[in-house]
Image 1 (cartoon, rainbow, N blue to C red):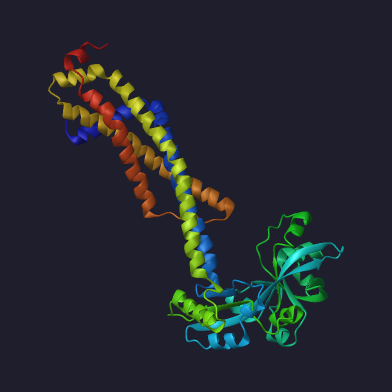
Image 2: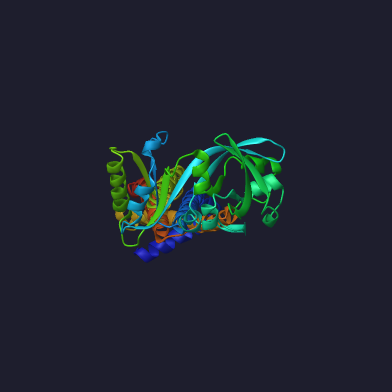
Length: 408
């Protein structure tokens, strides 16, 4: 019997008992489908997260003193001038961060984080999508203005404005910084993709989670820092190695402040690499768990193939009596097992594709499919078919023809 006849015979056997065939392949459906779905969603989620960072710019970096309690380690105006003229630096801005207390209209207090940064920070380096009003400007900076930009969820929580953020522009927010109460005027509301169905209580929880942006000069004045910078943020010029450039800046600051390793340097390229590693590890771990069902499916296929060998013992005896070799019998049953797993793998891949598209649509993640997933489905299906089909096929091949012919 040639290979074509063997395949035809295998198909006939599988179609001869459709119910048992489908139940046998069920474990493979689930296993392959689950792994494909997890891989597609994991890849899509990774691309979504990394693209968010990429939109901010791969050239973004931040530097800050490790010992921020010691003002002597803060970056000075002279340091800023020296760093800003480096050919590797495209944009450099000063920023400081402080804890503060916000009082809402009911005089309820919330601990919040205030960031004072020069206008280029929210315009160029970490651009905000403005929903209403405007961004902070050079005029705010020069006038030590009591201007503030707030998140959309904060606007909804403090002023019950719904999605009409224009109502918030010009409103006053009372914030105490360094024990000094201040009235800040809302000049802009920026987007944070807040869910539209949050209750007032849930919105109020976001008040302490969001960052409030005010002019750098204003926060510097309120904290009495005298121009000392707690953090610098910037963009590296295209064509320069970001790691080398930021390392060089760190060396300059350490030398000027007589420190060995006094500054933390963070680049968004590092963030992206870290996110990709974490997401890949999580996806691999979940895929490994889902793959357990493949082993279960393989055992089920081996069990059914052993039952098939038992049921067809007499047939095997007849074929051997007519001259079929052990190799031919082995090949026939191995091909039957292989076809079971390959067909199950293809159906599982289709189910995984449909499932990933559906779940991705629900959670707003675009599932990504790759050639590797197709190869995974094909190769794993084939390997399971061979590994779990070889023992039943061997059992069929080693049957004694005389004993087989005596079987009922």
